[in-house]
Amino acid sequence: VKLGTGPHATRADVAVVSDRGCDRIRFYRIDPLNATAPLTDITASDVARVFPGRINQPSPLQPDQAAGPDENPLDDQNTVYGLTIGATRQGHQIFVTQRERGTIRQLKLVAHADGTLGYEPVRSFLFDTVFDLTGADQTPYAWTPCREEASEDPQSEGLVFDAVNSDLYVAFETIGLYRIKLRADLPAIVNVGADKLIEPVKTFGVAYSATPDDGEFECEYGAPASAEPGVINAPGSDLHAGQNIEADLEGLSILSATPGFTLLLASSQGDDSFHLFGAGRKFTHFGAFAIDGVEETDGVHFT
Image (tube, rainbow, N blue to C red; front, side, top):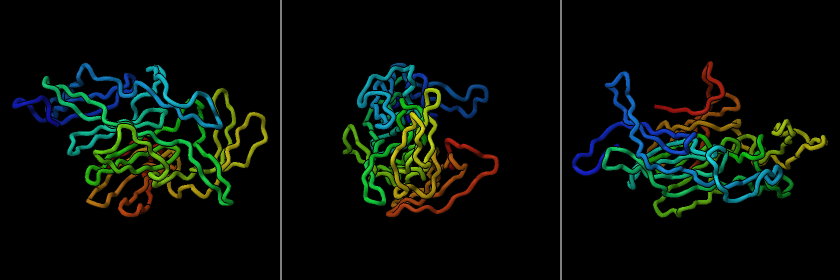
């Protein structure tokens, strides 16, 4: 990226990371010739918190908090989580997920005259986490993933930006894979519904039981309804379930991207497998593989 401004600007390789503890994005200049200190922090001193607020979308079956906007104390750690960056005509764009919430923020990279880097907000993406579905018998039901902790909303960790086709791919761990077409005229807040969900996980829409367990819940999908006291039985159907990804859906990486077609790699943490998808006019599952000794993968990257 370009560091500095005007005729004295220089170009350098930069590492971009999410600082979860402080809820900020940090930047490090990479010096490959410096073996003892290859990274120099060049984050502007005035960068703001990425998620000063939060939007709660609690389960209607496991209520623990009021729905809607709320203050976001740093100690609760509903802060920056997964991150990806890509170059567009509008400059370098950073996309970052919010831990234990259904929100993603888009930020624009900003170069300062002193050689530091910062960012400014562009827009937010708010993902639906409660879905209105219909069973095989045409009975409607509301579905949301089981919350092991009632105060935690579904979250995304893995995401990747396809700059060739202007597509943002987002992996929600217990929901599935989304594809969002990015345009410069998108509003400041984009509501993302089920129409953008292109690959649900195998447990999407499936009935489950949530058994209280020392302040948390033990979630079991596809189990018969339980009559035990305190157990929550969520209605569901196999009709909407995906065929390939065993939750949690985690890392994403692009193997190749050409105009109109993208080859995507995803990690299926629930069964220690990796999946190849082709994204064009149709979204196609090409196959899966495992790597000996690799289990419970979070992030994944192809180069």
